[in-house]
Image (tube, rainbow, N blue to C red):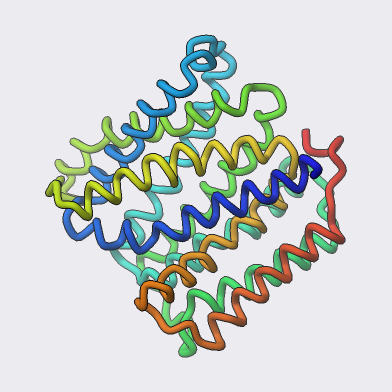
Length: 297
């Protein structure tokens, strides 16, 4: 099995983890505020990753720390924009706008990195975006813009930059170190900004140690964060940022499937059409628009 295929499977599995935990997190947020959840989740993941990868962590160079801090800044920014925007818009619209990072990755690479993006990749991006629309937007459409939509739009740009900066640094630094650092930076920033968020009355800190909250923290800290971001960072050694963004559009498909399995949502023709379009976009980009390994740098 080629490393490229293993990378694609790793990204798909990370998408599965992130999508499958959506319902768990949504239920837990009734008992814990968002910023507290992010701080605890990423803080625990940081401790677990430090213990598991201590031999790598203790040897990190200043340049590696700087590279990981950049990635962590964009990841944290993505969570901030998404969290704040969700207060003023619907989850469906937020999910669709967040998924627009699949467009921004090749677009930003083409504009600022002068990276040539093939027509097949753009075709895959278009199909994946159409699939996202069917998966997340109800038949009546997007409706009017509200104040939360442009905020979540910032989230899509931040996550696109996170993917791009992983691709930029992962060839020069340890993927394990970068995965640890982006998680640690997110935890630190969440903890540092938590008092300011409370003082600004954006969100009152709250935490109830219920079974649902404990389960959600453990699942997301271990699965979604420690494992998921480690897989993503490793995989991006062997595939391009544009392909990464396309494969990660599987996340809402897995979220919809999980919700259906738990009898939370009806898995209708519209949802199925969205999943098929995303899969078609991935297959076209992977089979017809493969990026040579030499161009991943």
